[in-house]
Length: 153
Image (cartoon, rainbow, N blue to C red; front, side):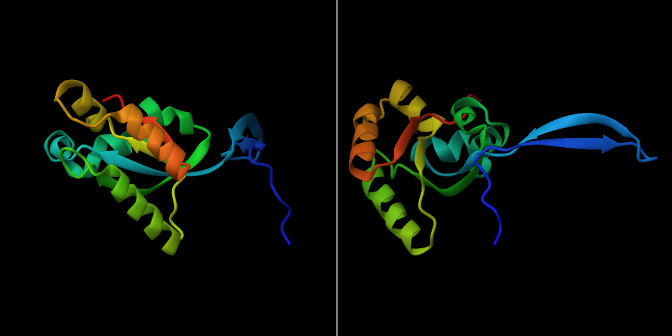
């Protein structure tokens, strides 16, 4: 049986040169754990400015930029990405379905990010979604953390 490892472990790596001589010590911090996230994008914007399968969201995750910075100490797995369903939005039914399907395939999520595109649509494009109300509903009814935004690009 393997010993349990604390969520965050500090490891000292000794770097050696070609002759085996120790050069320096390098600290490597291992992840605190794993977070599984779902991302909800704006259907109207996603296909226009987020072409390529939402490259900006995935770049942000990779660099832990924007709202993804909160996950800097975690391994992150995107388990699902969907759009709002178009105006006026059908996010709750989509998330309930995503959660149900996630249970079937061991792909449940810990948190939901509302995409930067969705946030911009509510602020500048007359999107009828009340993100604060929806955030509260998801957190209350589904027990999932909701983060308003993704990347800053």
